Image (cartoon, rainbow, N blue to C red):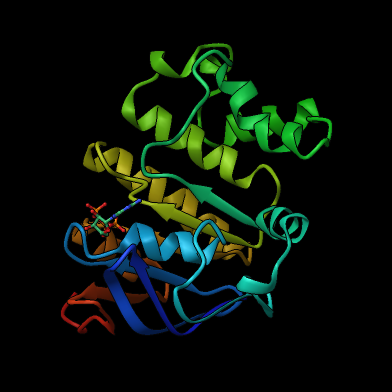
Length: 223
Ligand SMILES: Nc1ncnc2c1ncn2[C@@H]1O[C@H](COP(=O)(O)OP(=O)(O)OP(=O)(O)O)[C@@H](O)[C@H]1O
């Protein structure tokens, strides 16, 4: 679904990583870990076409990301749900409106049932009409997850989806992502949280990748 072949990325002259290979097969579950600043967010951005590799090739659903026109990128992004590290809500809209936003911007009418179902799924029915700044950290992360899946994407990329939440909430978020994977979705989670990875590995078959010193490696079995 998403393949990086000898891919590299540099901001200006500063190389973040190079010669990186990655294949996200349909229905797979991956974790991406590594020190702060190693390039995890940058790698995720290559995976959803926000950034274009400065070396090698990235293929999104079989197409070279570099060759995609603006409309094709927009179309392809509907197949990839992204949970951003900082959630990126529009604070003047309600939680329900934020969740429906991907439908609204793609000119698809938000079906009230879809939003209601998703609010229930992430446990935010009561907060539907609140504004994002009124939510707790865990509620914001769950709303971001609901927004990422409203378009029924094939792939979910989550950047630190359990950052700033307690253990119980991180388990709850993980169980939602595992549920999506069991429905056949491809999932990639960037995280520093090794206990989250250990819990996930006791539930599902997940590959753990470590980005360090500009290279991507399979993490050891000790994780
Ligand atoms: N727009 C940008 N322009 C220049 N440098 C950038 C830009 N975005 C990120 N960087 C740099 O690229 C490097 C990798 O950043 P990135 O956010 O991908 O790392 P990360 O592994 O996700 O970090 P963290 O775990 O702290 O979120 C960092 O040194 C960062 O300062």
